[in-house]
Image (cartoon, rainbow, N blue to C red; front, side, top):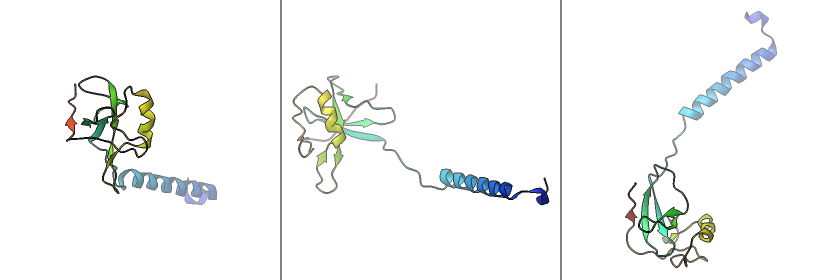
Length: 124
């Protein structure tokens, strides 16, 4: 094809294709990367024990306690305003699937009653 034979719709299609390609390259290469956490802090909802689990592999929720094998661990986060450890509202739904009294969780405020430093869970 020569430039004299191009129809207007072909020019529009070519410009749109170049724009789409440019946007795709910018979207893939030009944006800041989102980093994923290397580990997650979890609490045993019955005892209040804290654990740190590696996230390089998928984690089943609730996660298994490393000593007992009971599925009683849920993720926690530190509330920016109060500084307290809490579980997410999504984790509250997991409590129905966990046996025990859930003594380490205040289900109203979602605050975790935990003591000590988190213990690292070793990968098997």
